[in-house]
Image (cartoon, rainbow, N blue to C red):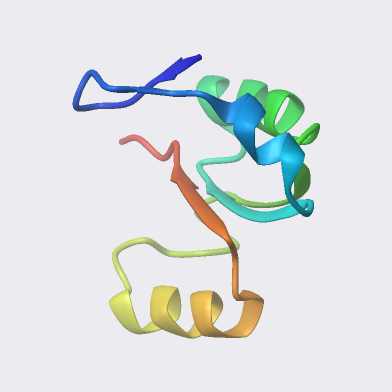
Length: 80
């Protein structure tokens, strides 16, 4: 079980019953992002970006990246 910001738990094991996920992860070089890359890789393909690869202050860049990659799941581990 994983906890979300709202305090709800998500059972990530349920995704194992389906196809492998395509996961977009931001904040890849931070402490949390680094750990998430390892733990999420069991669920599918993790496409990880740090701030040089995807500027989260640029909404157009985010939109374009999401449309290009078509991820099943987006995880934001970026912090300032």
